[in-house]
Amino acid sequence: MSGEKSAGSIRRVLVIFPGALGDLMCLMPALGAISRRYPGASVELMARLELARLVAGRSVVVRGHSIDAREVSELFADGAAGGARRFFGEFDRVYSFFASDDLRFRERLAAATDGEVSFHPFRPGGEGHVSAGYLKAIGGGDPQMDARLEPTPDDLAAGARVLAESNCDSSDFIVIFPGSGSPGKNWAAEKFAALAVKLAKRSEILRCADSALNDTRGGAGLNDTGARPNGGGGRCVIVLGPAESSMEPVFREAGVPVLKDLDLPTVAAVARLASAFVGNDSGVSHLAAAVGAPGVVIFGPTDPVRWRPRGSQICVLRREPIDSIEVGEVASAISKFVAQRQR
View 1 (cartoon, rainbow, N blue to C red):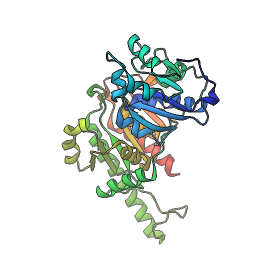
View 2 (view 1 turned 90 degrees about the vertical axis):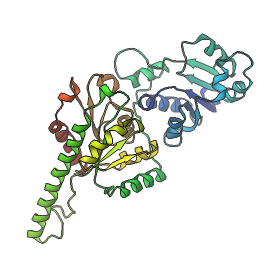
View 3 (view 1 turned 135 degrees about the vertical axis):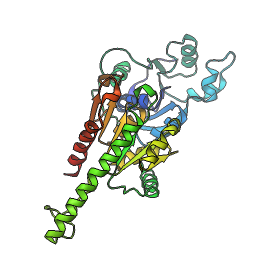
View 4 (view 1 turned 180 degrees about the vertical axis):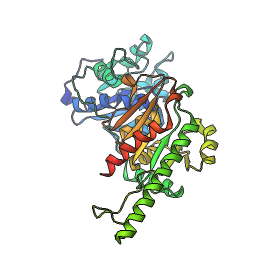
């Protein structure tokens, strides 16, 4: 491995990251800092394949690679690592958040490229948000904590299509993410269902009031500002991941539309199209915040100071036990976001 190259001579940068969706969204500010550190360089991510594909082309990451690739396995095996040398040798700079405490892996990765390689903890210690920990780990004096992900036009079209198939108006709805990676972090599915019903009823009351008012004014559906009234974002749609199929009957019985078997780009698009979202401390809540959706995130045992989704329009409700948070509290919080967005 040669010495560090000047920033201007760096053409390809690889970031190796083993985390799940929420972890990756927390890494986004560090990826942005790396991109700004090497202007004009191609920043590439090696991660779980679905995550690498998610961020490639929708962020500063231009290309994704699977962390399960054979070239990575060679770094742990005995014998020659010709494939690893051919792959990693293409990069001028490598940041690895993977196997940073494995001396053999460190040595073999460093030997597989002539570029500089640095190793960083997958879960940085210290106080404060984990995103700040990642920035500190890469030596970033860059204070920007932006973590934006931009759905593509094709993503948004796919999102609108699945909403239409569920008879949901893509211009006026709230999306609910009732799952997470741990059952202990989940608000009860029955409470999410009650929330959806409550918001729908509230929205219907507002619609009826608007309709009656405009009938007396002969306003053809116009409000005081001359605009057509919005339904208040009260219609809810549930998004379930593969591990949350057991929740589906709860929402079906409540008459709430359910979207399932969606890929992550489509989930991101649905969140972007929504008036707001509600979710647990989960990867999809981090994803929704990353695409700019305002929302309410419900926390129980985990610490929002460290793990809250990044975003200026995120409200956190935290209490233990988590089910002591009442439906009315969440409904009031999300209604404020919807009202602000419609002003």
